[in-house]
Structure formats: structure tokens, C-alpha cells
Amino acid sequence: MELAEIQTGNPYRDVSLLRDQLITEHLPYVKRIVNRIAVHLPANVVDTDDLVNAGII
Image 1: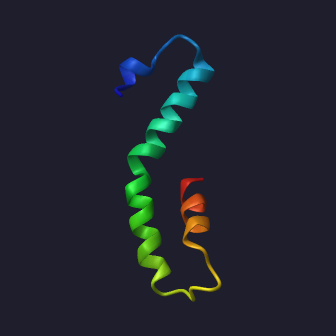
Image 2 (image 1 turned 135 degrees about the vertical axis):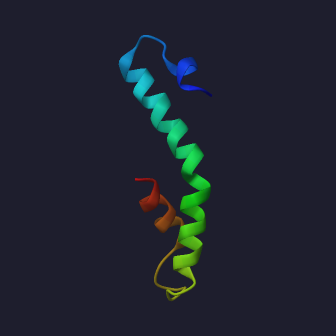
């Protein structure tokens, strides 16, 4: 979805759609970084899903 397609006239909806698009585009990078970090952490202490959620924020 291109930025021109997102612009609908409602600024709150535009921001929400743009945010969702940015998250979707960068999610593979976040997951790759999380997996690289998780290798060096104890498995029973940190959940990778929690790290992904923190990376999205």
C-alpha cells in the first residue's frame, strides 16, 4: 500500500494506517534482531514474543 493510497482525508485514520504499514514492513527486521538476541539469553527467562512486542513499540 502506497502513501498516496493511505491518504483518505481523516488524519487519525491516515496515521493509524501509516503506523500499521510501517510495522508490517519492519516486522521481519524486528524478528531477525530478536532471534539474534535470544540466542544469547537464557530460554526460561525471556520469551521471544515479549521481545518482538517490545521491538514493535
